[in-house]
Length: 267
Image 1 (cartoon, helix red, strand yellow):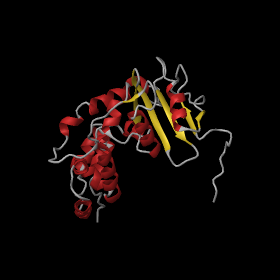
Image 2 (cartoon, rainbow, N blue to C red; image 1 turned 45 degrees about the vertical axis):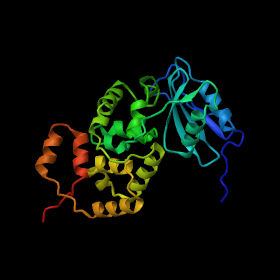
Image 3 (cartoon, helix red, strand yellow; image 1 turned 90 degrees about the vertical axis):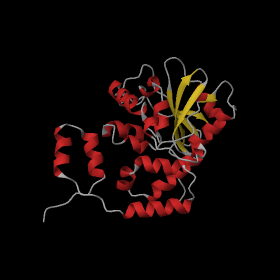
Image 4 (cartoon, helix red, strand yellow; image 1 turned 180 degrees about the vertical axis):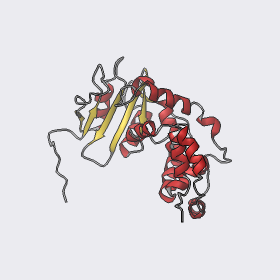
């Protein structure tokens, strides 16, 4: 079946850049705007939108399979690209090659911690804000500037404070591995493991799964480890632990506890 373009007059690439001043509850003016049919041209057009009042923009590949990418202006000439889409990868490659004059890619650490490792530490609303905006790793979230985050829908001071509190400690909690691999390969291995691990398993073994993705273990070994971990019996939920967390109002901790334990029903 042939896809029908809802607006054939629009070019392949469009962008959504927050209006100024941004009103968090007002996204009506965030309609996609034309950027260009060529990615180089479109990216130049989008980056020209950045100034001292605009710090974030979505780029959308509306006719191809590239998806979307979220861009942040970090400092003069530096762009932070968020997302695991094909479009995000193409934009990173263009910026890294310095093909867009005056702009460069903001480099992230070679390691890439899965975003899910923040799930137990963040309010579910804050975690969902990150996933809805395309963040895939802790490093992506940590590198996003406050000015740019504030221009995303429903992001406020509490969200930013919570994010900074958890991302500031992420590196100290990481498990060490003997043989590190390159950043893009880590992303590929994370996706590979995500496809093979059940959600409760991934949550229970978050730091361990992160280390597996950063290691040089071959795919066959990853397959076997995922199979064994998935086969493990989940421990039952202890009502006392659940009640203590609920009474204390620690919803993120309670969600993590329930997500990694088996809920039993009385006989």
